[in-house]
Image (cartoon, rainbow, N blue to C red; front, side, top):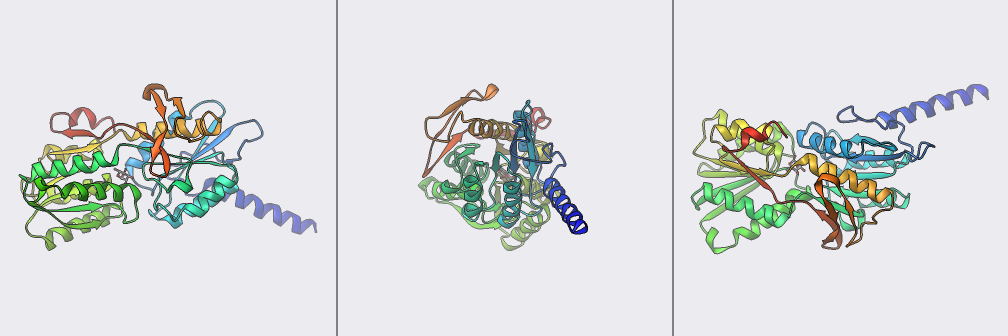
Length: 350
Ligand code: RAM
C-alpha cells in the first residue's frame, strides 16, 4: 500500500511539473504553479499566442508581462509550436487544471476553441481574446489592435498607389483560419470592389501559416505562377518579412512592390532598399499591455466585459468597452505608417 501511494505521489508530482512547465515560448513563465490563488490571494494570468517563434507574439508578451508586473499577480506565457487550434486547446486544458484566474488568447480559429474556452469560463476563469478574436460565445471581451475596416482600406490604398493603380497583386496571409487576417482580407476585398480600383486585380490569396519557411516558399510560388505580378500585400509580420527577403534576394526592388503589416525591426532593411516603399503596424507591446490590464480588471471585478465598462489603462488612457458584432471589444488606435523617413527611429522600438 505504502509503495502504491509513493508511486502515485511521484506520478502526481511529475504531472504537476509537466503542466507547470509546458512548452513555454520564451521561458519567461513566472507563474509556474499557476494555482488560482496560491493560498495568498495571488492572481495568475495566462497569455496564449498563436505559435512559438514569432517576434510579434514576443512583443505582445512583453507588454502583457509588464502590465502585470505588480504584487499579487503572476503571468504564464504559452504558445503551441504550430499555429493550430489543437495546440491551443491542449494548453487551455492544462490551464483549466492549473486553475488560473484569467486566459488571454490570440486565437488560431474563431470557432474551434469555443467548447474549451466555455469550459474555462464555467470554471470561473475570465477569458478574453486579443489580436485574433475568438467568437463572441468564447470570450468576455476582445482587445482589438485597430479597426479592421481601416486596416483593409489602408492596405488597398497603399498597394494601389505603389502599382500606379493597375495590374496584378497577391496576398500572402498567415493561416487560413486566422480570424484577424481573414477579416482584414475581407475588408480589402470589399474595398477593391470600388470603381477607382477596377484596374487592380487580386489574383491569389496564399497562406504562409506565420512560418518563415512556408511564407518564403509561398512567395516563390507566386512569382513563378504570376509572371506579371506587380505587388504583394502581406498582412502578417512573418509573411511580409519573408516576402521582403525573397524580393530583395532576387533584386526585384522597383518591380514588385511589397506592403502589409510588419515589425519595423524586421522590415527596416527592405524599406531602406526600396522593396517595401511603406508598410503599417500598431505597437504590439501596447496591445499586450492593454490585454494584461483588461485581464486584471476582469479578475478584480472592475469590469465584466459589457458595453460601457471602462477602466484606467495608465499611459494608454481610459479604455472603454464597445460593441463588436455579437460581442464586445476594446478598440485601440489606427495602423501607423512606416517608410524610409521614419523607419530608423522605429526599428529600435519594436
Ligand atoms: C503576425 C500575426 C499576428 C498579426 C501580425 C500583424 O505576427 O499573425 O496575429 O497581428 O502578424
